[in-house]
Structures are given as C-alpha cells and as structure tokens.
Amino acid sequence: MNEMTRCGFIAIIGAPNAGKSTLLNRLTGAKLSIVTPKAQTTRSRVLGILMRGTAQVLLVDTPGIFAPKRRLDRAMVAAAWGGADEADHALLIVDSKSGLTNAVKEITERLAATGRKISLVLNKTDLVGRPNLLPLAQELAKLAEFEQVFMVSAATGDGIDALLDFCAATVPEGPYLYPEDDLTDLPDRLLAAEIVREQVFVQTRDEVPYGTTVETESFVEQKDGSARIEAVIYVSRTGHKAILIGAKGTRIRDIGARARRELSTLLERNVHLFLRVKERPGWDEEAARIRAAGLNDPSV
Image 1 (cartoon, helix red, strand yellow):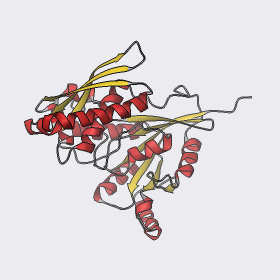
Image 2 (image 1 turned 90 degrees about the vertical axis):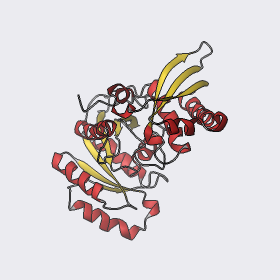
Image 3 (image 1 turned 30 degrees about the vertical axis):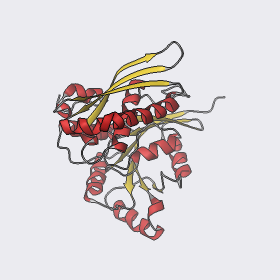
Image 4 (image 1 turned 180 degrees about the vertical axis):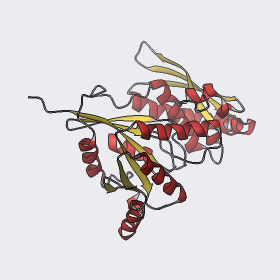
C-alpha cells in the first residue's frame, strides 16, 4: 500500500535583508532566488519545490515587506502578502542581528491578525551570541502565536534539517502538484532576466540597481543544444546607463560574462548571452514593466 503523500505551500515572509532568498536556496539545495547583500533584491514571488520523504513542500519566497513609494514597490509588497495569504503555513524570517525593528514588529502583528498558522525562524544565528536569541524570541512571541520557533543560519546550514523536517510534516495530506524532479515554476526567460539583474546588483552601487529592471527579449534553443538569450536592461536615468556600460563597455561585458556563467550552470547547457542597455524614464510606474518582472499590478 502506498504511503500517503503530503503537499502544500509554505510562504517565507519578512523584512528586506532578513535572508529569505538565501534560506529558500538552502532549503531546496538549488539557486532559485537571486541573492545579494543589498536589501529589496527579490521583486517577485519565487516558488521552490522541495521533496522531503513523501512530502512535496512548495516554498514561496516573497519580496521583503517595506513602505512602498513607487508602483513597482506596491506590486512587490502586494506579492509578499499575496504569498502569505495563499499559503498553508507562513515562516516569519527575522534577522537575529537586527532584532525587533519597527518593520519586523509591523509584519509580525499583521501576520498574527490573519489568523493563519505561523512559525518563527530566527536567521543569521552565526552572527549573534546564543544568549541574545531567547530574549528576541520571547519579545516576538508577545506579538504573535507561533507554532514553532527555529534558530538557523541559512548561510552556514546550521539548524536547517529541523526546519526541513517541520516543513515536510506540516503541509497537508494530498497529491503532488508538480513533477517530483521540478525545482521551480520560474520560466527560463524570467530566470535569465533575474540572473542578469543579480549581477547589476552585485556590480553597481547606490541607487543604480534599484533604478534598473531586466527583461528577456529572446530565448532561442539552438540546434547544438545551447541557448541564445537576448536581454535588455532598462534604466531610469542617463547617468545610470553610462555606469552600467562602463569605460569602453567593460562593465556591461563583465555583467554579461558572469551572468552567462551562472546561467550555463543553472540551465545545464551552453549559453550565448547578449545584453543592451536602454534608457526608459519612469519604467517603475509602467504596468507592462511590472508584469514583465513577474508581478501583478496592484493599481489595476
């Protein structure tokens, strides 16, 4: 007799830079969500598919929740709360080093008000002395009722096994929703754009990465099994375009070379990547650009 399978959605929620994407990648054992040291790197919902025993855990990495200013920001925050609303369980990820900030307090209280099942994950425990973790957990427990509390380091893997076991046990009984060998539902076109955008974050500073978006214009499977990808990087200011291109095109070549190597590994094939930079003021208020980033426009 076949063992009963389990399948369900678990949302990963938190403030910017709590380590949500690093945690998703650690839990799934694959690079599904781009990671940089900068806050607000993740813009859209990313689904990671985790097989653990007879359970299929559908982990939803969401953008960090912050006070939105632009149409793009509103779409990001709506995606985060949408991910929480649709999940069977929510993991509240808190940066142990930053502690109970106003942003964390507001997110915790709003999650508690939904009445859904929540567990607390104190992340980055490798950066904090153990005696400081329990008081932080106790302060957060005053704001919400948690099913479980986990203390982990997504960077080192410490405490991850217990969290994996919990995720597998907490999703409801039911059939798998995805093939067992799938890692994500993210289309290759969107994955390509995200990997290029990651390099923009890594290789540029200040407001430049926040003023850019990347779209895959063409993704063609070649006869030799390789992929030919053309992508455009939209920038909101003339100065940003110059920075991204760099002296004699060195910066854009570097962005392309590193993104191509990353994509070749992720897609398990040779990749020919062609980038161009285009100035488009106000792209972050355009519905089409927001949809292309994998987001729903909350203004509609």
